Length: 117
Image (tube, rainbow, N blue to C red; front, top):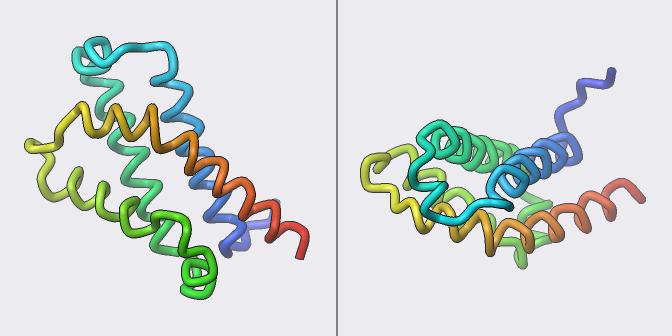
């Protein structure tokens, strides 16, 4: 297996993390999410991973794709890591339900463009 860690690699990791979050939250309501500590920790961890991989993307890729909310991805990670007890669960849940389906499509389109190069 090719272990080259470049933009394509990190985008694929990000897509996997988003797919996990979407799949684990798609069939539940907020009250179920709120009561499931294990799921909360898993989703938070995946959001942190998403951000960590965002930080590893090339500067050129980020600048060339400024329509993707890179800063918000990192900002949510910072909120989770540095203010954990103050993380607002409904914000995390709403991000998973509303924003991630849009983000995953953006990242898949970007990955598709890179794969064609």
